[in-house]
Image (cartoon, rainbow, N blue to C red; front, side, top):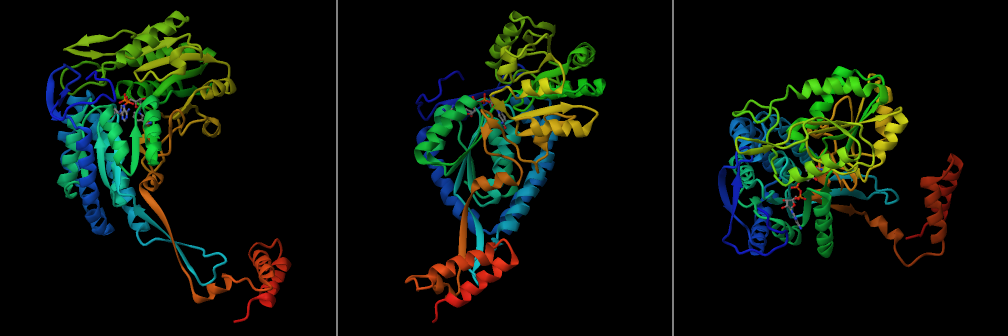
Length: 517
Ligand code: NAD
């Protein structure tokens, strides 16, 4: 598991999978070699031809069957994802709803766009101007370990609806979830080789970047940068969904019980291993203590490390993360923060857990306020008013998400517009990722492009303009007649004149100087 990215490996090695809640081995899959990735993409390319030729109606019918598969196999999804990814089964099961909505959104869009979109022919009177969206071929996915099931299904839907084949490299931490995803698509009736998985580390991801026609990468900013650099060699388009350090701004008028509950949910969901989870909290100075008391009461009730399915926070799904938690906690304490809850890893039933960790007395230069911690942390910093909170919230190299907590919705929405982040929620956090009609993505080191909403579809299509012209178009061809310049100027006045008079004089220029047949 600790192999350095980019290292070559022989084709017969196996990738083992473990349950992070107890360290037990769950299974193994075959590691892909670079040659395996090339073969997978070649087969995907062949299969894509039939998938695209099938027609949009049949393709969308098959994809919509996936909704039934997700409903019918929900218990199995909960079990597999919980065991390999360490979250309560309720969480992956609850995400099947947004996945079904994603299928509805993109199959409807694919059908709407299938006959092309007619636009104005502008000066080319009598011509037909249309835009067609053609599949690009094979879409490659390189994904992280924190939401392997949800992201692994969701991001492939727009590409498949548009008529592409897909090859996914799941995180090395969860190959079995990758296999489950492939099996679900197969169960829905997606033809062989249209959806494939290749397993391995960074070298396998790199090979996929070399082979695919378009890449969707979700992971850390450092790896995202390497993927983009590699894609530049072949000019392969990439969409990058990277890390975050989301700020929560608590306004002076906030309902403290509701806000404390929302902040705990927004930091502890998926044990804090959420790209757009709350990572730092700015609260008015006199509210810090009453807010902290409510937060402490709530985190004390969360269940962690309980055997069975009945718990709120699972184990740390990727053990190296604990070093980051420890380093960020130690840095905050060394710089003057007060630890109010948690702050130390727990060993339970053979798994490693991190408790909800509450800190007050935070200051902006602490690592936790600057870097992504990616755990169940509630670091609270006192501020004097909205403007100071906004200034600190925007003082970040990240720009994925943010939230505002207030009873004054208009003031909250006004702050939302001024926050430099891809998604902002008022009186909630994290869950806009489940509102699949909304675009999702970040600014600056949080990413490039958007992976959700209708916008996601356009990453996987080649936009083609088709123009069909009548014979009269010859009037625009060489050789230029004596009055051509006057006709050209007249046409500009006719279409863009500032007044009726100027437009009419454009008509006269065109009529008087037009070429005679
Ligand atoms: P990571 O960057 O370490 O790995 C992501 C994927 O890239 C893995 O599959 C890995 O094997 C692969 N990879 C590693 N090196 C590679 C290389 N050189 N070339 C190609 N592929 C390579 O990220 P992670 O630790 O798995 O995930 C956590 C990160 O993901 C966090 O920063 C989190 O915020 C981010 N994330 C972002 C979103 C989002 O939508 N913005 C969603 C989930 C997670």
